[in-house]
Image (cartoon, rainbow, N blue to C red):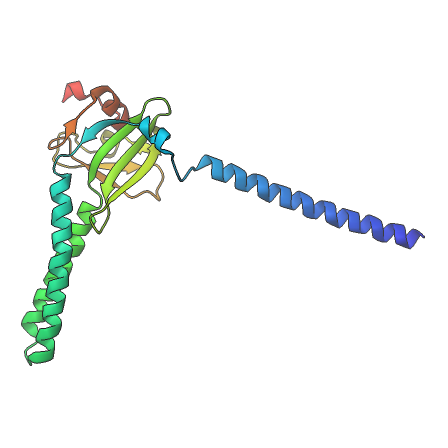
Length: 199
């Protein structure tokens, strides 16, 4: 009888320990999912007010797309030249230059900020920029996650200013106050952490 009670007690202890582990896992997952929301409803996105716009972002998108098409054409022509000619130096040189320019332009354009939105109620910034293929991409970060340009030695009056984030997983982006339009000065100052009246 004591053996049966001992086995029952042991089974109860194992079951309780397993349930506590499962409970801790579920609680941790719920906390993680609520702290980092991945999707926003259209109603939530309406609360973001545009504070900065780069008018030339459309031109940058067109250039980015043209570079992709040009690279595809050059690769096809290079393949045809390699198949039909003995001299490979010229077609391979043209192909290498084209691929190098594509990677440089793609890297720059994907970090170029087109529009900044701010939600004054939540102190969040919605940043629209291009990806490698020239399509629009958006990220949402807290204003507190943005390092002021002056703290990293950037001058806001330069042609392009680096926007750095506290979270190292977010890549640096580039902002152009010189060529862009500030739509709301006060909210823009909150984002970059500088007094625009001194510029």
